Structures are given as C-alpha cells and as structure tokens.
Image (tube, rainbow, N blue to C red; front, top):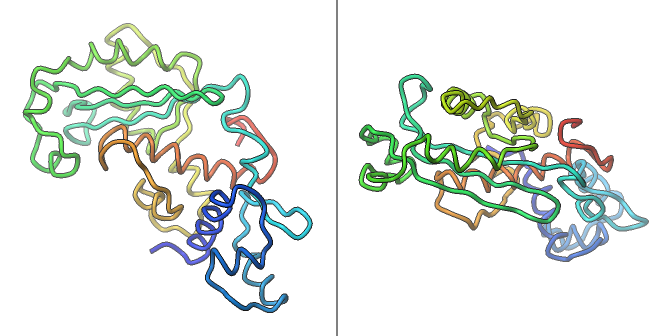
Length: 252
C-alpha cells in the first residue's frame, strides 16, 4: 500500500514534467490532484505535505529541482546494474543475465546479455523472469560476458537495488578473472529507507508504484527492465534527499 502523500507527490511531479515549467499551486491542485475548487488556506494544507525535496517554490509557483541541476554531476559516472540468477545463493546458483546502464552527463550506454549458466533454469525463475533454459542455450558463459561488461564499471559509482545480492554474485566471479571490484556502491533500498520512510516494503516493484514511473525498455523482471527501473526511482530519491542542494551521489 502506497501512502496517499506519496501518490499525490508522484502525480504533481508527473504533471510538472508534462507542463515543462513551474505552475501555480492552484493549477496543480486542479489539474494534477483533481481538486476543482480549493480555498487558499485549504490549498496550502493540501499542497504543503506533498512538497518533498524534489520541488521548489518560486513566487507563487512550484517547480522541480531536476530542471536546475543534473544527475550525475559533471565529472561523475554512474553504472546502474542488475543481474538475474538461478537462485539466491552466490555459491550454489548462477547468473543468467547481466544488464547495466552507464550514465555520464546526458549520455547513457546500455549493455544487456543472456548467460548460459551450465545448469537448467528452475521453473520458478522462468515464471518470474520469462527466461527459459532454451533462451540461454548456446549463449556465452558468465566469464565471457563479464569480460565485456566489467570495462563499463571503470571509474563509476555503482547503483544497485539490493546491492548485497548482486555484488555477492558479481565480486567472486570477477575475482576469478583477476579483477577486484573496488567501486563505491549506492544501494537504492537504503536510500528508500530515508526518502520514503512511510513505505513498508522497498522492493523495486514497490518503489516503481510509489513514484508511478513508467519503464519502456525491456520486459518486466528482466535485468535491463530492472536496471531502467532502478535508475528511474534512484533519480526521484536523489532529488528528494538533496532537496535543492546538489551533491555528488556518494555525498547524499
């Protein structure tokens, strides 16, 4: 269950993005929140609880801080990463898909590969991801795919939903290639604890619903979809947590 103030904030943010510039609180109440007639005093009581760190006031209008400063900041590189696996244990299960997005300034590079795990994919994983054993048959093994993927991580901060899980699979396999992953890591689950304290569950699907973001790339619960979703919710939380004071990601 998404608290009502989070749903209202998501609708206000979406309305402002579609409008492309600041709008008055009265217009926002009418067009974004479907409140056709609101007295000034009541309007403030309705709007104020919605205004998290994403929003700024400018005279009588409200806008979005994302219009005034960017993510990532100049000179900063982010890699949003997601894995699909045959199970929960890094020592007993295998990677079946790797996807990442390297974000620098206004440029995004995407990487997505299926991996042959060398074992059958369990039915519950196929049900969750849609990936079958036939899909991965004949695909490169995880070490071949990692040799392609690891250069994207160079000099970047990693952004991962539930980072201990993915890094638990990634680090030991990279070590077998002679690569130690020393990148700083942002875990969006931890950010969600601070940005959305009223949200009881912080799975990626829950964050997507809380922010009402739409993901157009890839199929749901595939690695690239999850990476795109992680990037979308991370952006929302970044501006909530910085509240008009631009910072590098690791300073948030």
